[in-house]
Each structure stands twice: as structure tokens, then as C-alpha cells.
Length: 345
Image 1 (cartoon, rainbow, N blue to C red):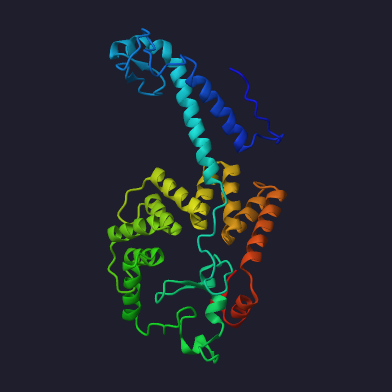
Image 2 (tube, rainbow, N blue to C red):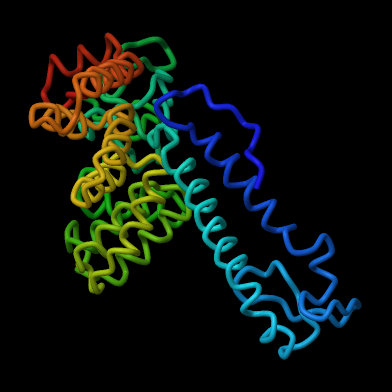
């Protein structure tokens, strides 16, 4: 087998691209090792024709004219078949990791008023059931102006900074607005309703089945944290589900790739528990860049315990500073200084 001509510049280890090139080249060579026309010629007897359709069940790389030829050729093909399947699995795993460890976009997006990235911290943003917008703490706190240029204090007037609708005065009115947003296929509203059903709060009966249904619906509409909640349900056996770690990991990965820092953090914990420190650090670093403070603290603890290097901790601090640089604003600082509920980092 020839050596792939891809050159890696990293002396310590091959990059993902280099590894993928190696595996892809080997798969290509194996796929043509038996016969250039292996998909139209019986690999056992050499018969050609349209009736050569009985392929290998495992690798699907060779075909036979009948089951008898497949059985006769099995011992000759076995080694080639196992190697191809192994490399195909390795190739799939590498492709999956490349996608898994990409830095995802912020799941919260930008504030629709100031157009600055929304903070990861819940107290730094507000979801509005009147218009379905998520508004940063700075714009929620700051005064707005009416059509005549008169200054309105949205704290006193209790109006939405985006659509100017007056906040609901009763829990019933809030639930009514949320249901309207759910009917409008608002992913955030659907996810919130799933939480209400799961916990049996805000006038909703506790219904785990309904909660999971809503989580799945919200996830399909793009809510990354909904995947995390589904993963948590399988991981703990809550919400009327049996524990299924494999499914839990699957949904955590989906959530992480969509931008859920909590899902990413959970993956880091799982990798640490499995002894995969390098993979855990990769997850924590991505979560830190997304503004997940717990991941930063975890890396600090790993550094203190000797499980992470000084460079790892320094990189994490730099990533968190990059995140803060993207979300900070004078208006948000003023809101946080005036009221703790508007703290955004």
C-alpha cells in the first residue's frame, strides 16, 4: 500500500485533515484492490452480467452471481472485508469528530435592538412572549422613546423594549401569550412549555411525555438546549424514560453541535469520567468560547490538580476574554450596576 502524499506540518500529531486523507486513501485502495470492475463481475467465478447482484453484506465492495459463490469466496475475501469495514468506521468517526469539535455559532444570536451578541448568562437576556424576541439586559433596562421623541422608562412603564407591548399582569395572561407563540412554532416558547410540563409549574400539569414531545419539536426548530434536555432525560432516566447512555450522548452531541454550551459541558464531564482528558478539554474550551463560565472554572480546577497545563488554562482565559469582548456594552454595564438581575457575565 502506497504512502499518501499528504504532508502534515504539525510535528506533535497529524491534523484532522491529514488523518482523513490517510484513511480516505486507504479506503480508496481497498475498494479497488480486488478488481477494477468488482461491482459488475462475480468475485468468485468471474461471471459478468446484470445478474451479478449478490453483494457482500458487510463491505458491499464485491458482488457475486449467487449465494453459493459468495460462500465459496468468503475465506478469501474475509481479511479484505474486515480491513475495509474497520477503515470505514474509522473514517466515519474522524468525520464525526471534525463536525463535533467545530466552534458552533452562538445559539442566542444578537440582540434585535442593539445588534450585539446576546450573553450566555440567563440574567443577561429576556425572552418576550409578546413578540417572541430575546432582548439583552441592557436594552431591557435602558429607556426608550415614543414616536414624538419623549423618553419612556421601560422599567416604570413595564413595556417591551422591542414591540412596546405592556407586560402581562397575571400568570394566566402570560400563559395565554406563550401558547400563541407555541402555535406560531416559536422554538423558544415550545421549549419553555416543555419545561413547564416537565416540572409541573406555571399552571401546567406535570406530564413527562408531553414535555419530551415539546423538547423534540423545539429541537427540530433549532433550539439547541432542547437537545440537551432530551439527553439529560436519557442520561438520568427522568421524564418517564429508561436510562440509555448511548442515546443521551447522541442528543448531547446534537445539542453541542447546534451551540448548547450546557450540552457541550456534559460531554466534557463524560469524557473526563472515561479518562479522555484531551477530548474533555476540547469540549470545555469550546464551551468557554461560548461563554460557559462553569467550563472555565473546570479548566482552572483541572490545572490546579495537574490534569491541564498552564497553556491550557491561559488559552481558556483568552477564549473567555474574546467572548466578553463580543458581549460587553456600556448599556449592559449600566443595567448590571443598577440591578443585580441584569448581570450578564
